[in-house]
Amino acid sequence: MKRAKWIFLTAGIFGLILTIPLVFAEKVISVQEPEFYYGFVFLNICLQIIYVIISTSPIRYRPIMIPAFLAKATGSAALTLLYFIGRISFQWIIIGAVDGIFAVLFLIGYYSTPANYDKVNTDKS
Image (cartoon, rainbow, N blue to C red; front, side, top):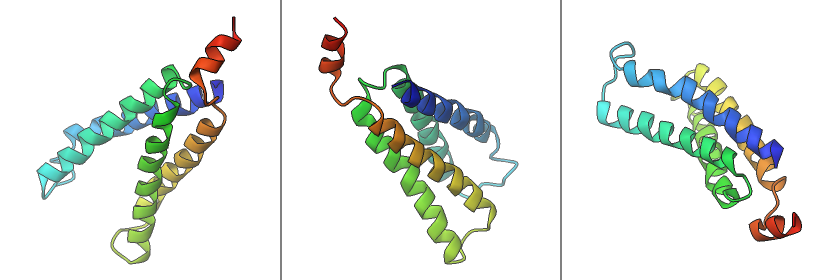
């Protein structure tokens, strides 16, 4: 359980540190479609907050770890595919690799967390 707590807390804080500055970077990176850009950025911030919430009680929020894994894994897979078909540059592979590492860590956190919240609470008494 401690493992999952640290995995999700690290992912959430790391993600917030990297994502929040993007809110203020529209002019710097010359965004062509701001509706998609801000939609992505704020959805990503929401996901980072969900990761931090999961870290507060991994046993309680264990079912949410699967969609959290899918969010990381699909992003990584999409970036990898886009790179191999020549639509993005190599720098995006690094971002995809970080997401891929966190996806694997999310699965480790999921499998290292007890599945039954009630059983864990009754075992302590």
